[in-house]
Image (cartoon, rainbow, N blue to C red; front, side):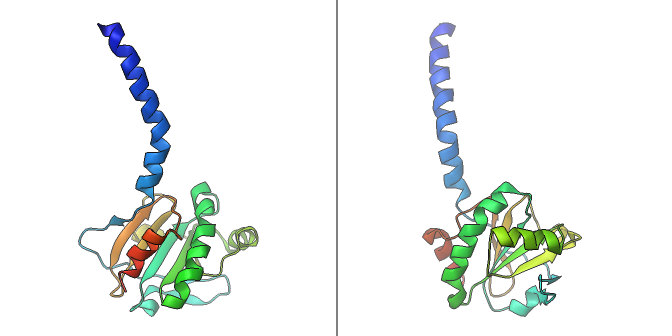
Length: 173
């Protein structure tokens, strides 16, 4: 009797292992609603040109705030889709900000030579901002509404130019 169950368990396990990447990608592509929509922590960070950016400067606009690092393979993988998404949403008044965590200007500049982006990249060299936000690994992305509240969180890589994902962001305007 026990022997008869083993082939079934093996087939079930094999099916699970084959389908796991598909299930994970489908689950990962969505945005997770953040309960109670807390106020997003303020930040004051410089961009590679030395300009200071504050989250409060963008109040009244929906913002996609992405915490990333150059050493993070999923961060690197999602950057081209973020650039494609930025090209779609920039004219709609939606902001996309990449906050590099813990790296210096030279490292970020070297990265952008390989992966050019046109949306603002900010430097959190001492990682203080990422500690104040509820970052749960890299990349972690937050969608902030027009009132400065965190509405969605996405932990892990996304295809940011996915129409359904962008529509969820657009619906916050």
